[in-house]
Image (cartoon, rainbow, N blue to C red; front, side):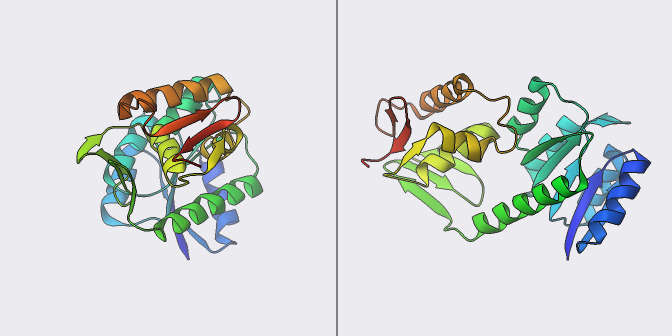
Length: 224
């Protein structure tokens, strides 16, 4: 049985999700605000957290930042905030998905299962990925160059991980957008990805040593 934490103050949503998800062998625990969620997270371990942004005593964005800093637990935002800036901010903070209210229970269930499968699959991988003087520690989600840590945002890290875990293979821009921005691709364009690749290269101090651009198609780490 998977244990989920729902951080939400709308009783109608709470009751509906509790009834629905428990039919699919999920144990759902509820926190109505930031304070309650912090107390629960100190005492219990959850497989996944579903988080609203607008909470009575705080900001879901800041709570997500804290969660991702302290524990390795997937987070799905479930919120009425549908502005592009909010979605990008949520994903940049490390959220694994972003679902806009109103929503369908079956869609939420599908996304929960997708995120959980992704986490289970990633835990089966080796602990490190290495390429030249770059090392990615999969346990801590940190990237090092010659033992010096490079600080990436959560979304930058996901792009780096995808490229460096597929060494010598061409990864198309479409593949990156599909995997990295999954289920939010309706608002992401090529220009956004280009900006992220540029920032990643700057942080890596990449002068053509790591990521190669295949013009009009995508990117490759290695010779191919």
